[in-house]
Image 1: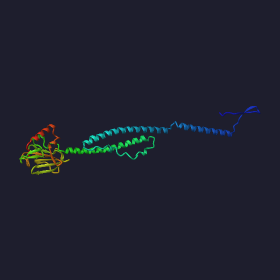
Image 2: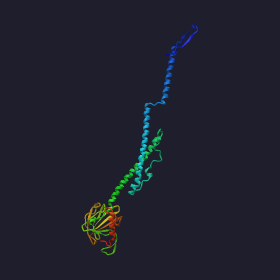
Image 3: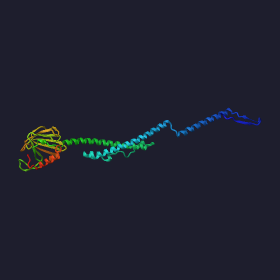
Length: 322
């Protein structure tokens, strides 16, 4: 309700009501409205500094959620990095050592992230340091995973080659134990049965009944299967990795040149052909072009006790059979 104002009239000796002109009323109304508007604006501005809009609240929640996800991502990357570090240690000091491969240097595993500031585009934000740190760690981790993946691919290749090598190296007796009469002569200086002089005997002689099966002692390729004056009917097998075996004095050859054979495949039968005084198999193992003692290549089917017994028998023999 508008306030009524009065003035004192000395002529009438009484108070008279002041009548406000329309212009003054309009002026006062305008001033009131402007005052109210200014007060409302100032109030809204001041409150806006302390109160958040629904959109601002949603953005703030989203930012907090992103920060939480970054922290969780950092923890997961740390856990993955620890697992990968353990795998790298096993790779360098177990797997690569076993397969005779050089360890991968630490510089190579983590190389390629120095010099140029590759994270400049991540600068200038409220949480730039956190984002840069996580991105750097992710880059290093990715690099380590790539290097380790390539290393494991190499280990798989080496394992396949190792498996192939292990199946190729001569590792079994060429004549089964049940078919053997005895080990007639071993590797070393022996009295030659025909020449009657001490002569280097480059293999082992296994006495067995004529016709006893002879088996390939490792995977390989037959490079010779014919007859010679000294060895009679003979088979040569190239095993790769520097190994070659010779099977001599056969009564019959059961393979031919060019054939691929596996360990344990039948390649012929015990005989007495060539320069020989009795039915037996003369067996040689060559490594890198030189004969070696075959007794060290029976680990595939001899127990330690059987190995020692064969070694003793081969050393006691004073005369070879060829």
